[in-house]
Length: 201
Image (cartoon, rainbow, N blue to C red):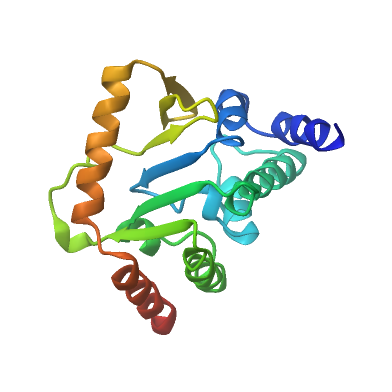
C-alpha cells in the first residue's frame, strides 16, 4: 500500500500530459523506444535531467525543476523492478553528442549508459549518424506491452503526449522498431561508440 501511495506521489510530480502513460509504463512487461534528439528519460542521470529541465522554455521554477527531476528518477525503478521488464532503447548518435549541461554532465551520462546497458534485461543500441535515411525519421516513439499483454504505442512532441491504442497503428510502430533495430549498431558496437565518446572528453 505504501509503495502504491509513493507511486501516486511521484506521478503527481510529473508533467500533467505524461502522467497517464507513466502509470502504464510502471507496470509494463516490455518497453521499446526510439529517441532521436535526447537520451530517454529512463536512462538519464540526475545531472542530465536537471540540466534539461533548467533549460525549459518557458522557464520552470526551482521547485518544479526539483519535482520533475525526482519524478523522472523515480520512473527508473522500471529498470530493476521485479519481475524484470524487457527493455530496449535505440538512441541516435546525434542525441548522444547533443550537449546537455557541461562536459562533466555528458561524460557522466555516457558512463551511465554503459552501466545500464550491461543489465541483462536492458539493450541499448545507437543509430549511427552515418546510417543516413532510416525508419525513425518521423520522430520518437515507444511501443510497450502491458501486464494484461496489451500492446500500446506512445508518441510525444512539444509537451503533448498521446497513448496509441489502435492495433493497426501499434503494429506499424512494432514493424518500424524492428527495422530500426536492424539498422542500428548492435549492443557491443554501441557500447564501443559510447566508450569512444567518453574517451574524447
